[in-house]
Length: 246
Image (cartoon, one colour):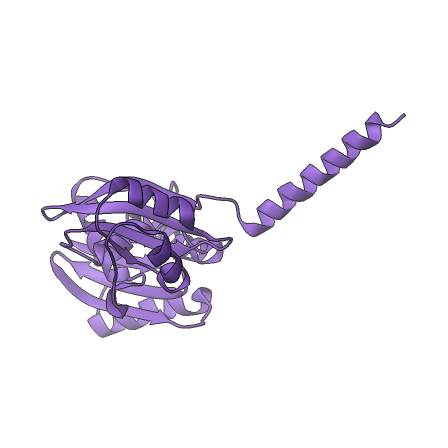
């Protein structure tokens, strides 16, 4: 079984192809490039190097969020376009689960953290039970102090990974009362290889969706949507105040 993996949920752009237990190719770039300009050329490079007929793919796994709103839309649009054109199923892979899958076999609690701004992180909690990645807490957007409180209440050693590590490392070291570690550079960012490999597990379990049905997991409103709601609330409050005046 052959699965294409795509991840543009953060600063990283990554494309990979996994066939059964073999990673055939992975192209990952963590640099200030626009994903709309890089993702398809990266895919084109991999398919040419592998002499891969994309019609031979069994499924397309995509990091479905949370993450950058723009990046998720680009990844989703790319996956949906390929799925519709090739008539292949999509695999909805949570971004934080794929990050945790980079740390295969770790004995500690796994806590991917992605910088969500405003002192918040996108996160989820995972652990390995044998070779299986299990979800302890579903993906969420929380304040870093709230996350630290949750981890302290669980009382278990934890490994952090993700682009939130350099942003929140010092705060976590101050707030945490449990032993913690931080993953090294080669496994602390999004990788399409993990998306494809975890996606393959989901395919075997029958967890696929149609290209038409796929939607990213944003978890919270975009900045533009938050600002619009704030403006509407201010206008409503102003109108109410105006109406109550004699």
